Image 1 (cartoon, helix red, strand yellow):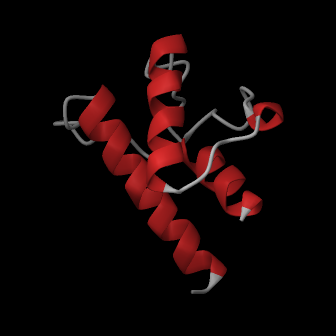
Image 2: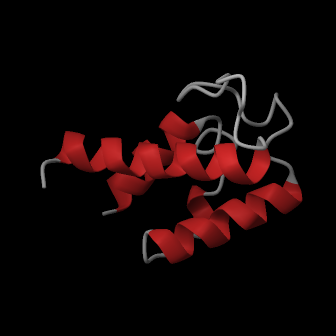
Length: 87
């Protein structure tokens, strides 16, 4: 699978999870790849742990502690880029 396709798939799966788990399905379609997750209150300490667990299950790998940062979890696009760079 080429890198762009893989990244798109990762992004889509992350977007779907965030919408369903944290935004009640995002009924107004507000979530975009670049939506600021911390600023919107989507990612707090509990939700970050839930998201990390999802990433571990869904993408068969834990996020190394040194990659858990505000920059890498700023938005879905950043998370996706970080995950794809790990592969």
